[in-house]
Length: 340
Image (cartoon, rainbow, N blue to C red; front, side):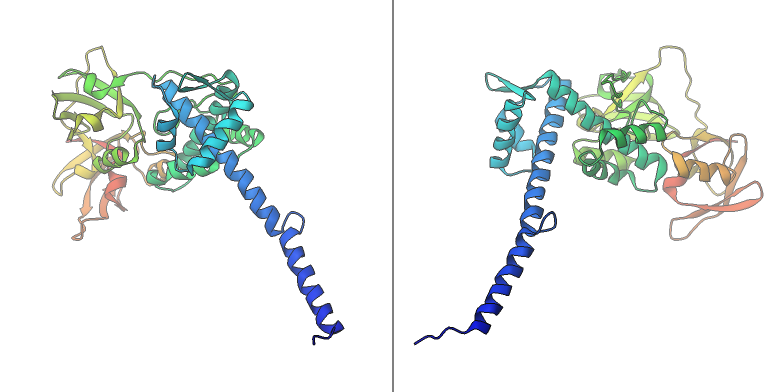
């Protein structure tokens, strides 16, 4: 026969009370953490849907539910729930089976795009993060910055019109600058132009472009253009790309007569017995990295030569203004020279 034990009952009471406190404690309780996490995830899903629809519409493509579910990395049920809520809140609407943004939804989407591109510009200009990290880091921040924080960031950066890839940054009122140029495969042989935009999606193609060390702002001349490859010369080097990769490069054709001098190259191509003159630093080098190169003496008009080659490949030492400066190949590739 069980007997009532007041001490055991009291202990059980305190255990249950402690459990309920941990579970439902205001703000910091598990219940509220899970609930707020769900809300945060719901916000992220909604904003990612808006951004994807904006990009689809901006490129002239139509998107249905099947396509949307395929491109978003979320549970299908969560996406459907978000779509229903967005429809009720007049952010999107259906035209038959095609999803479209309302004016309100487009304004919201532009705010997300604005934060993303401003943050990429911040990472490029103000930090030492690799360009391979910009997109993913901006993906996180685009859901966290308030409108006031976004405007403070824009002012801090000098209200830039373009992100480091050449994508236009929407203004506070939603205005967007025009990206000048056409996709590289559309240029005929012997065309000369300047790279104005490098598309960073899909990731697999963007990584191929990064591996080729192609720089935004560079002048190029098309030397071959066919169904299997696009070949162009730029900054003393020759690049060969598959058309699907080349299509991620936007190039503004230069109509006036321009001559690409054969002896203009990247510092990274300098040989041990060669001398050269610095003619500038590529636009690919920004912020602190650019200032550091200038402070080290890599300024226009300075003479430069190789002081020491690293048997392991890099860094190599360059002699400039009587000082030996070690640079990695990726740094030297952003310094433009004119060989003697």
